[in-house]
Length: 387
Image: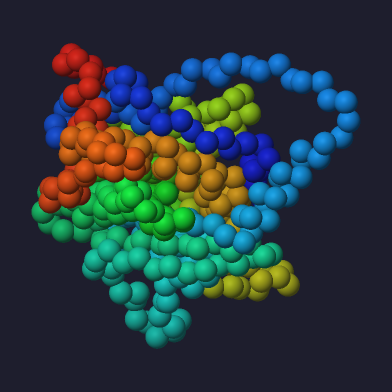
């Protein structure tokens, strides 16, 4: 089922990296949660307009698009997604539903054995092919976030993994003789599952999202939305949106990255619906003579691709059909660029000839905190700003 968003409505243009002088008052520093530091958003100066040249005949420039398509079809595409949330919210099932593939094997129905809880970070990679287009998909499942009695710094393993992938890419990038194609294991999107309490974000959610949104693109969703009525779902969504604004948590898509009026119109509709109320299911049922993905209850079948039942189609369109490349662009040009600048400054990298960079190994505590924001804060004056 297609939604009102379409890829053609939002052309994706590569983003420029952050400049150290860019500043935003609504982002937290990594070491002190009460200090504000710049956000990943930045404004770019308008590029000078070059007047078009009058052509005397057909040249065939449009053939470049076909060349790019052929090359892209040969190389394929990479996309890395992470799912975060407490146990029992259906993270693994949602991934299976998104890509209509058995990324994780569930237990056989009817045996009464629940799916095992995730005990450590697990990454699984599959090649998905559709109509000749190959997608190398890597999904990282996370521990049951917030399941312990003492949840102090329970986000460290997750942030450490994300920064670890940035470090891995950086170490490949600074080699004198680099690979022609550096394997990209950086997390392009993190889907954050909010438990359907119907109240507001928990303090744990707020603390973690403040750190997470500065390191990776975050898309929050209301998990198991079928446990809420339509009225409860809308009220819960508005409370979450209020909490996000009140605590200056910038989830994807960020307003400052809207390229033009078309982007603003498209992304405004998305931002108005975030967090999406979703239901996951990886089993098909027969409804009115057609097979649909859904969850069967004694009251009926909840169709995950039916907008009248949940907003799973909006999440699928955002992640795959309209914003997949934009997620990758922001990861490379903003989040990874912040990390790269921080690491180079931290190691006092000095050029020693063409292609030479002396980069010390990453410190052990770097993976526990979103390091790029420390150097961003120190690059400005010491005056504190608050939302």
